[in-house]
Image (tube, rainbow, N blue to C red; front, side, top):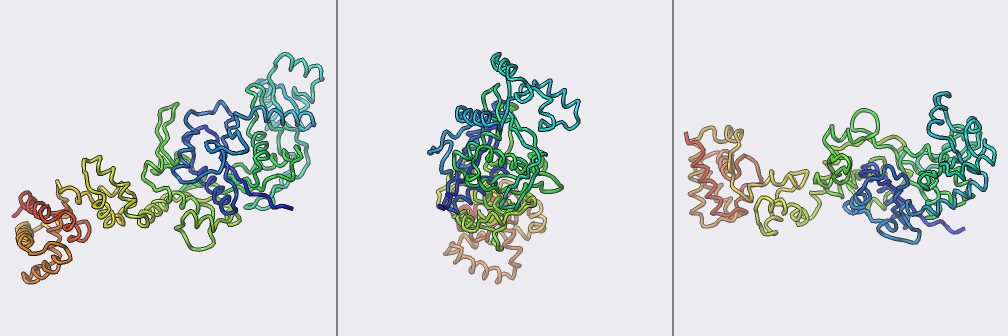
Length: 509
């Protein structure tokens, strides 16, 4: 028997922004497909026209472009199994609805919303199933003549799946093992609505997975209750041989407390739950995104990969290619994964450290331009090489190293209290050091530093007090890189200008 080609799909609904949990699901599908040399399909499940949100589909596509996860076929890519939007597949679904009806696997129900509500009031925990369906208005309980008359009059109806009670349904799940559910707990799910001539998620999902030859369905734990129904639908169509293997991923949990991660948690604790910033077209509300918060996409991907999956070693930082090599669905946890957003900050720092200085400089340069600073790229790269280890985000570089590009306009009080607490002494240190530097035959730090150290020793002055007082005049605070790396960058003229200006404005007594 020929081994089946691995084909997986990510199939979001365009009902709003893409949640970070959905990104994790897509990532696991991507890793699985790449590891097995298979196909990663992008399908849009938009059969619920009432919940459609303009711009959501475009947002989802842009999110994956930023994250660097490429689809092999689907919306925006093309392929041999299209169309890939469910709203464009109406005629396909109608054919399979008719097949179920003709084979006695489904039936038409004409109950109005009011009738259903009345039945729910009458029967506690009402479920439309084998015990109640004959009390309702459907093609099983009504005479054929009445059914024909209802259809002829244009009466709206839904098609329900006929669930036979007392059947043990086995779902093989790579992560959770064998899951067994008795069909008696399932209701006769609605598969199709005549009102909009569209199927519900359950039918469209099964038909598309079959026709698109999906081999594995990797999705969130919240879909596990649907799996037995989907198994029964595959059987109803006679598609047992092409039934995909399931893998239901653990939930993403709140950083603290119990429950599923929500946008409210992000708002409360100050981190995004969407990959990109989202502008709600209905309310005008703006929700933050990881891209706009200055996270590197590689850091987001690496962080998400380890939420519910263990690579089997102690390695935390991995390239996408390394993740593909190590990924194994059987090493996914059944238990929920806590969303430790502080760990993501750590990942971002690590990726800034490992990323090429020129790449970080390219991200930093527009921030300089916004402030009216035009510097050659090679000089920006130099600053980045000195300072990137001190930041968690690229935008923090400005506050961390703005003194490379402009003289301080104010001086930190804490630094002054420590290093300028004897103004007359500190002023003397800086004034005489400026005179020494001005008349030094060399200025490059590697040559100047030993001369300065010899000079300070000859004066019998404390090195720390002299150099930190000098640093405050150049930086505005007792922070920054090695002082001679800074003087090399800003040059002799600017070094002396900054120090002497500080002598003019700082107290001398």
